[in-house]
Length: 108
Image 1 (cartoon, rainbow, N blue to C red):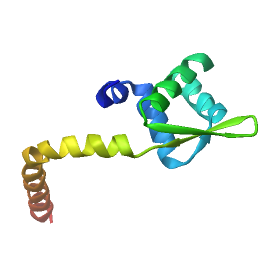
Image 2: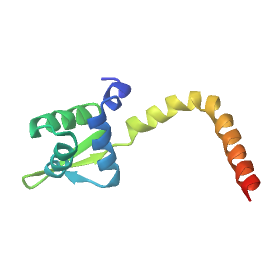
Image 3: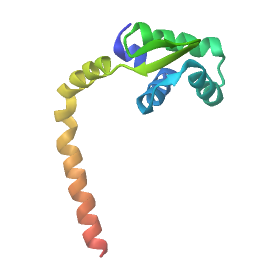
Image 4: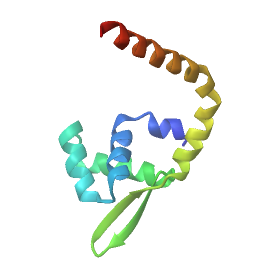
């Protein structure tokens, strides 16, 4: 599965956000995602499987629990791909910053 196919799903993006903050047991992920998206444990498990198989997440056993962690390698590949396009918006963001600063000066 292509990285953007993985990231295109809001549930998987949210799971990655959770894992970026800290490692979590699968049950903890299920609790948050079920509450936020109203999906079943089985559906969350499928999303975790996609993240695992696509390399975005890793899992390790800790007793009976499965602990998930984010794997940054695929995200670094996405970032490298996006780097080709940053030139299109970097100067526009700098110009916006300048205009905001001018607006603040005018209001004073």
